[in-house]
Length: 374
Image (cartoon, rainbow, N blue to C red; front, side, top):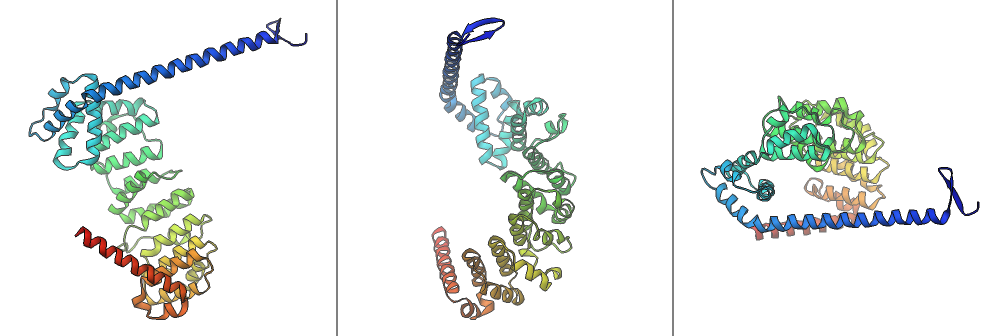
């Protein structure tokens, strides 16, 4: 029959089907609206209750924080459920800002509020966000014991970074190498800012371990992670005498220009290494097809700062046709103007004058800032 459908062996007019669908959609919208309204009211009520008790809880918390005997357990026992949540929020806020004896006292409050025990439970049974939140609390409380006794292994890069920071901060790593390996072994995604900072802290404790692990694993990393590790290596200073840097130079041949640029930046502190003084190395590096990479190479040569490096940089800039790369290279040369005399101005002309003016302006601005701060 035209204008009808068959449902369970019965012929039903299409108009009836459409009406039924409309009713279902309408009921769904009403239920959704009611749930949204109810949730909004519930949140508003909780927020109002917390705001009402917050001043009193805050005053009492701060008074005890600076007391020689805060007796947190007794105080927490007098708090209502709402007051406990407010105390926990305040604790989170203050632990981000305080350190020293004040922070030590507040960490005891965390124990009195039962946060470590909850963290252990959440590590064993929570989803990713809950686990990460639990680890973050343990970092703030400097308490690795709940993690160490939980049946839990970190799964995501953020979890691994937080576990590594927790173990480093509480002195529970056998060596910095263990923490670096925890972060990088099997890593398949880039780190957050927190993760990159954790990697730097660990690498700074044992730079040789960072370079050794990098040499083993760099080929397995995605470009974004590879670039992050190279940037960390570039911040480790020039005191690395025996580390294998062949993987840094090999990274200059990577397909990804971000990796090549990061490799050039990382090599800025290794100009004294003989293996970097091969003419073929200079020729390949300054002829990279990417202006971004060439700019990083120019800055690398400027950071090396010796006569050979600056001469190569000067004459590479003569044929540079990308404005940004030219500016980066000229700026690097201007910072070393005391070592090249008038050669820069004679060869680079307008580009040299522009960079010199900006360098002078920056020096004056920094001088005024220091004078104001002083």
